[in-house]
Amino acid sequence: MVAGFAPTLIAWQREHGRHDLPWQNTRDAYRVWLSEIMLQQTQVSTVIPYYARFLERFPTVAALAAAPIDDVMSLWAGLGYYSRARNLHRCAQAVVEQHGGEFPISAERLAELPGIGRSTAAAIAAFSFGVRETILDGNVKRVLARVFGIEGFPGEKKIENAMWLLAESLLPPVGDVGMDAYTQGLMDLGATLCTRGRPDCARCPFAAHCVANATGRQRELPAARPRKAVPVRHTLMLVMRRGAQVWLQRRPPSGIWGGLWSLPEGEDTATLARIADRIGINDSAVELQPLTPISHTFTHFRLEIEPLLLDLPVAAKTLQLAEAEAGWVALADLDSVGLPAPVKKLLQGLTGTLL
Image 1: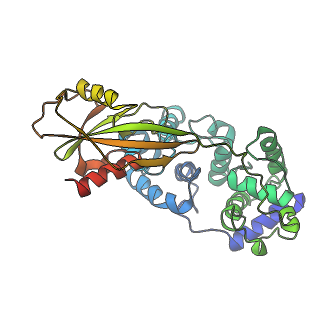
Image 2: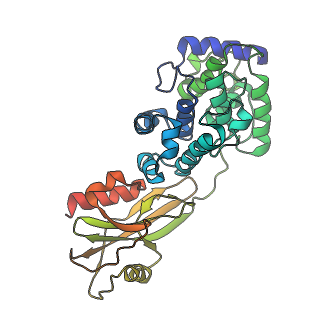
Image 3: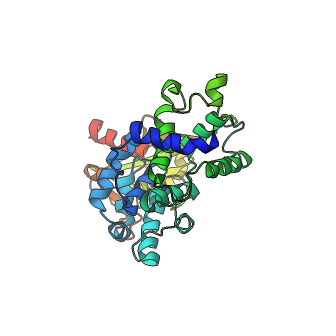
């Protein structure tokens, strides 16, 4: 089965795989890289419009490298996993500054760039330069676990290492011209047939040899991540509105929503009052009005947000910070600011219902 895996997959992809995605049929490493970063933990249908907008705004890696980080974060807003956007910008700058604007050819050199892991580097090298390297993303792990009956959670280091060895043994022979089709085939098989919930085994080219199909264990393989209770965190958000403007501040570069613009946060109303006081709002008569709570789920925890509205008269005296880390932003200009999705939804609600 190992010897016949690559030719079977290549033949299947050429006849039944995906051939019309926006980032296919190109050797442009910039476009390939951009798509691979966006596709990390994100569905194709979600990525396509973001990919188009990015290319329109940043047609080359040099254009992306030269852009302000705020422009990058604004276009990325809503796509999630925001460290990808920060690394995207850093990587573009590294390619321009260290490699003369050209992406390295080898997977090893590509993996040295910000935000590019081993599997992503292999995909870029294979699609852009035809390099013989294997990928091992979540879709590929699922395919290998089912076809070859690999037990254990693929995120466990021991299991993952074994899968890397298997994946390398399945590669087409040296000199084979089908690396594009092989790599795309691994992605297509996991995304279209060997799906997590409802695998279409009847159409799979490996159905006759698949351990999971033969034993009826499609739902058991690959093994699920060991369950842990999802921790819950709580925070208060201060929505300071002055007419048609709202006060925003940039979050730290690391951590959740790193580098995005958001609302001031605190554990209690006394903390929020101190925040307001620091920017010159110290009127004891102002009242905090509770807004509809928001629940937002991240990969490893759930965040419960309690927004409190502080409505200020337009003529209120406030300290306009000189540095570009906080300030008043027009509610009409929210689309031009990189905002976390739940915060943007909250502020759009203010525009639609309270103004």
